[in-house]
Amino acid sequence: MTTTDAAEAPPPERLQEHFDATIARDQRIEPRDWMPDGYRKTLVRQIAQHAHSEIIGMQPEGEWITRAPSLRRKAILFAKVQDEAGHGLYLYSAAETLGADRADLTERLIDGRQKYSSIFNYPTPSFADVGVIGWFVDGAAICNQVPLCRSSYGPYARAMVRICKEESFHQRQGYELLMTMMRGSAAQREMVQDAVDRWWWPSLMMFGPPDDASPNSARSMAWKIKRHSNDELRQRFVDMTVPQAAKLGVTLPDPELRWNEERGHHDFGTPDWDELMRVIKGDGPCNAQRIQRRRAAHEAGAWVREAATAHAAKQAARGKKGAAA
Ligand SMILES: [Fe+2]
Ligand SMILES: [Fe+2]
Image (cartoon, rainbow, N blue to C red; front, side, top):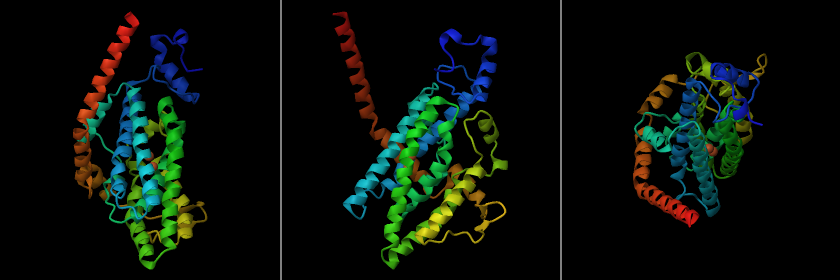
């Protein structure tokens, strides 16, 4: 049963009221339901940014596919990076249910008018980075995305269910890779610690600015697009990761990190918010490279899109002819 059958659609003057009641009852908004413009725009912006992050996120790890140290690691990494492409596709499809056009979204990404997660603007100089990305970045993605499975917009929530299952595999493969390296040579252990040192703070920044500096958060929470604030999710990630770091035998690079008995959570230091702002504005270590590569791939794939469109048109024309005969 969906929220509005055509027969029981509310009269125009009661659309807003009906929408508010649907949200209040924790029911889903579906593509054919009326929704306020702001809700639609916020969702398109969030889903597009999420889709772009999945696609751009293929690059830092993808660089290691040809250099993976064994066939097994290569196969795992290949599958992981391919999963991220799949996540991008589900999410672009979810954005299309809101009337967005995928080609237009891609243009906006390439022109820098739409963003992707700041984390993918950091380089991957060692193979340990593959493990740490799985552990931290996919781990942070899980913290962010599990609550989105209950997001008020149906197609987005349903896409997240499948994505989260795959993210949890990604996180485990990263952790398992690091565990293997930690059982190896001293040089391997150093590589892991170095990667942890470089990725820890950028991973905390993935949750976005602190709550008091996050202007869109309150609106998104009222609409139940988002279920928890940036700071709550960041805390959840820290609490989840600290015992994993201890088990792995690495040190998280934060002298202020300690268990707070009273709060029942870990206290931790403040990320460099100026750095986050610089990276978001395009001045991170790899921003230019990531976009340039995405643009080149888009241009190189133009003939495939043209051929697919021509083929689909031919099939449709044939179908019509067949039906008329
Ligand atoms: Fe993903
Ligand atoms: Fe992932």
